[in-house]
Length: 302
Length: 239
Image 1 (spheres, each protein chain N blue to C red):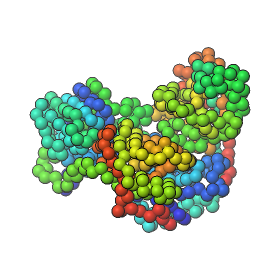
Image 2 (cartoon, rainbow over the protein chains, first blue to last red):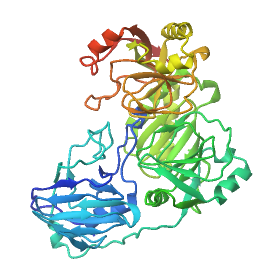
Image 3 (cartoon, chains in turn cyan, orange):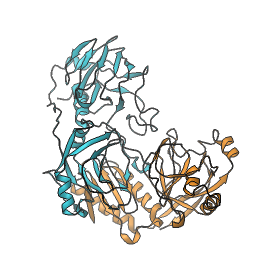
Image 4 (cartoon, each protein chain N blue to C red):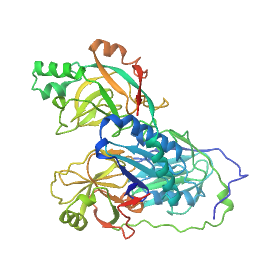
């Protein structure tokens, strides 16, 4: 049930960053309309956990939240707000006492919230009722340097919160929480180049277990035992979830801060859910691709 | 009209082979901008490359939206288009401190190195499309004999303002970044400034002419000129 924020006190609240964690940034839905200038879309790596965290504090319009990677931040509150943490399985402490994931809790002046190191999964989302007060840059709050001044939140920085506290009056929230899935099968659609691959290579790609190598918000690199190839492909658009095959047989999957064009053949496209699942996997984890039963035709005539 | 699917919310229109050349870059760019403006409620982005135009939808488009887009595209392609573009003069310092990759490529042979720069300065380039980084554009117009391969091992850090060549493309790094292209010079102008609107002054279809400047001129102007606009004059293209 949507929560009505009208006629609520707008109490001034903020958080001071005592420790930013390993890599914590502000993310909203993403920055759209500027791909033609080379702007990545940014936004949450795990969209589903981001939406869950927002809903838990009554934000049904996906307000900007904090996305942490592996080790979360330590925050000092200067006023009242509802908070929720979703995503990776991670210890969450409020004033040194453990707090449950995926449940809203109240923080007020002087409270200290600390996220430990992720035990399972990689990315956590910390949402605040009403969201964060920041200026939008090119239509988005998502941090990405040099479009925004910084790529991440910084130690000592103060971030203003809307601090809408009316969730206090809401005893129930009525939606299903999607528990994090760690299924190694990632669902994909056929990419624009898939039909040009020979059948042996297609079978090999779908039957291979790939190992995740280096990864960040730009891309996940996978290694398998794909043969080297001389497929040449001209530079063309890519989007988050695009699976590219490199000449030496490695796989690169474009993620939220990834390039808007790429020169490697686009063989597969991860479903949006699988993009979120992948973003919770760390280096060394094995994955394989499975064509989605929800597969789409190669083309449509408009 | 055939639209190739790319995931659930993106569609690719292939550009006909016979017009896959650089002469229609400004036209494609105007088409994409107009399409995005016209259908801003349903389209979140439109991106083009040499052989494709990709439409990114906010949601899975319905039959009515698809039909409207097809009609709009057919109408746009039949209309005469007068497009204004600029030719920019970009000063570049080719001092060896900024062009060490080129010197290395020619085995420290100063004659081949100087001949390359001299030939390069005779060329006029065209901004084709943005990609790789915010504000990084790929320019065409480099003769085949001046093409340089991508470096075998990319550099971890290339400085902003670096003019570089990757195969047949010429680009200028707008920010510090890793880079695998051969560095041949440095300009003091900034090609991306988040505080400007628009943040990038060069449009697809614009032309670029490079002028050689001394190391002293580069040093003297790099602070005060970084966020100014380079010299330019406009020209009209009729499609």
